[in-house]
Amino acid sequence: MFQRYVAIGDSFTEGVGDELPGGRLRGWADLVALGLAAASDAPVSYANLAVRGRLLGPIVAEQLEPAIGQAPDLLSICGGGNDLMRPRVEIGYVIDLMDQVVERGLDSGAHVLVLSGGNPSRHLPMGAVMQRRGDRLAEAARDAFVRPGVTLVDNWADAHLADARFWSVDKLHLNALGHTRVASNVLDALGVRVPAEWAEVEASAADRVQGTAAYYREYVLPWIGRRLTGRSSGDGRPPKRPTLELVDA
Image (cartoon, rainbow, N blue to C red; front, side, top):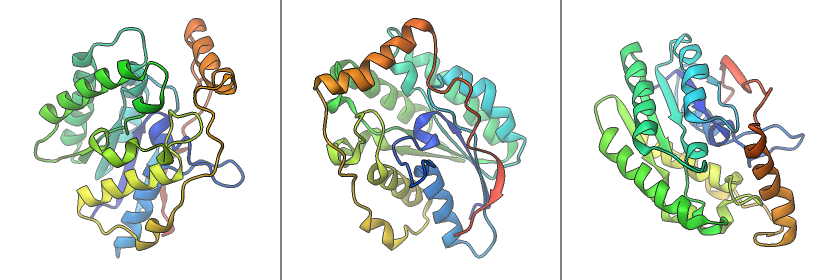
């Protein structure tokens, strides 16, 4: 059983799409920490260094060593989704960066949890491009990260997660139901009991605006604007939980 869990990554790990009343983000990593704590007789601590909008290079450069410095016995990494959305991406480069995280985590004594994100391509503009790139990345991850000391959670291959009811109104980030399913996938992969009450989580009733002028105005055009100006949605944002804190199960 793990007692010191540190997560690194981008908006997926930060929990974007799973907003609680008051605006606080939850997300699958928070839920995994809760699941670990609920299943453990010992105290469980959790930190989350993820920042939305980060490419995998900055994730490794900015988050990996601060994470290792907290001596986790479980380290999770999910990244590369923002890289896939760039005009050009080298899948081998993404896998090499992920491998740096895995090797550094293993060398530190941590068990390393490698996740792929859910597949949003069915609902996105130009989703066919995302599908092809995501398939290539997922296949490469399956070849690279099935090894001792590493648990690969292949959410990209979870056909249920492709359903629209798991996605928030922007179609790019999972909603509460989607984050809960990912957390369940993680706990299953780690051999930890999934809390029974998670099955009762329901999807948000947000309006579906995919393909409408409102959708492009609210989500697509701002994203394009950030790409053209070299900005990120995470610029200036600190990690939401930068140091290990006890989890109240």
